[in-house]
Length: 172
Image (cartoon, rainbow, N blue to C red; front, side, top):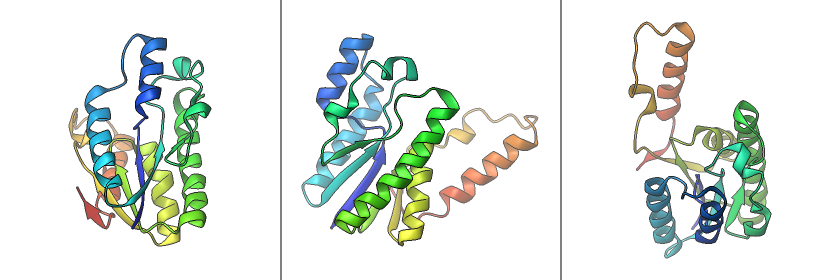
């Protein structure tokens, strides 16, 4: 069985480089959860990670992610800021999914719902390729700060997120 895992997971060596450049580790809870799940899946399957760098654009320009790209980890647009970075994440996860599928004929895709920019690009590619899509739901961000007076665009966004969440083939 072959799986692509979409998250913000980074290898241990890259975590150490991020610590040396920034003075702190990236999101310890998320890194621990994703690394444990990733290591567990590797015991039984062929697993490849498509990941966005879990730090801001300013710091990400100092980190040489190219040194850490290997057959297990592929990083999306990590050297841009804000909305441009998110657009690059969607685009690169879409393109990387096609490249990995062509090489490995992927059976399943596992997505981190909280990392929506990488998830959306990979999700669209997996729909086209007819790959089974499984989502990890650890939190529902649209319900953290609900304010019913936030406006029409916010309401549409929440409806989109709920429809998106309901469109996966499986859930963790």
